[in-house]
Image (cartoon, one colour):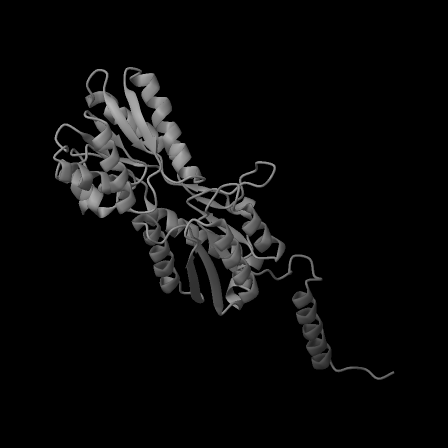
Length: 335
């Protein structure tokens, strides 16, 4: 029998050991990787395409959401990120059409600032059925069984109305009369804000009478027209409650033009720059800031995690608290 030399035996043994370690058959010597499957997925992608459905790009708050998502995309280091942002203009049909377009384009993930909590499910289902993950920005979406879909980034909108009611309860005279902008039909965040105000003011100040409630429309001009009608109809208005700063700014313009601003409290919502200045100038009693920048940043991060392979349940929800802004703390928000 042919005998191997001692050196050859050692060499062959080393080769066998190396192979065994590589395939992990030697106990205690199995190799591991610090990369998760999700990280490997992300690393393998040189380009990520995000489809962003935005509910109404004529609104200052909504524009801030879209701009922040684009900024985050430009700052992302691990891959090139393209954001295709579209304006659904508060129309469900348009929302579905754009979603179908995203599916055709084979985007990697959709970020939806939805038109309606229940009505937008058809568009969402189309994406999910096509294997495209969906992230929910600012507004929740629920399935036919009433389950809120994840991951969501936004706020508890009921809290916003509570803050408005608490502020007005302290300053309004007995038997005060107020008017209220309700926002747009079908928008979950407007509905929750309204409920927060009405339920809280009824508990704190049952003497306060809500003279009128109207949808604010899609622009400041429409909100101003609503305020003009209220001014004509009601000789005494002690406060204007608005679920949106653009509506509140329209009301401010109308009250100024009619010479009715003095003695009328305005409470706004969202914390846009013009509203903050109105608080500083004493034209608004207060405002409630919903931090659209923080919400958009968290939404982007959630969308990337979906692309990386994490599940919606693993990511969960990210909630940003509303902040009360008044003359005592306005400088903090003007920095």
